Length: 210
Ligand SMILES: Cc1cc2nc3c(=O)[nH]c(=O)nc-3n(C[C@H](O)[C@H](O)[C@H](O)COP(=O)(O)O)c2cc1C
Image: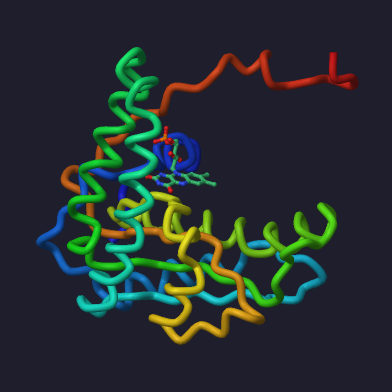
């Protein structure tokens, strides 16, 4: 069932969910399928559609991915502890990351968008075209999920252990890159607010950079 959200509300309230996952409610495969079908409508370089989504629901695999994720999250939290102590926004972010690290294996679905062709060491233009062939689709997936009452969060922690994750999931590492690990679950409540952002005029440049 779709939430009653205008397109603008959908775009402005699709937040990084870490603490409001309903860990007790299963996610139906058909709902994920709908989100993936919508994701497929996103643009891709040269009409290549060289993307894949690995949808992980098996509890053992989620536990193993969770271990990889947690190890990197712990390091991140340790490194950022001093900065977080002085900044309430970072404190809140850190609390969310810590909470998710403790529960990530309980989040019922982990979605790993992947793209064919490794770009390690390639020029920036090749990198940009390859990554951007899958990122719009993955974001469409997250928007479609939000429209259906599901929360998600784009994460990259596990990529530090991409090869181990590839072995766990049977992804051919030598020819397929993982792009993110997106935990997905229904949310507790569906009300989300626009996030804090820098003033627009600090990042928009009309005609010239200056
Ligand atoms: C490229 C990228 C990498 C990210 N990696 C992580 C991550 O590894 N772990 C995590 O908890 N959040 C991660 N995030 C989520 C961001 O922290 C989140 O999108 C940001 O704080 C904005 O959240 P908001 O839209 O709710 O304000 C990542 C987001 C992006 C776009």
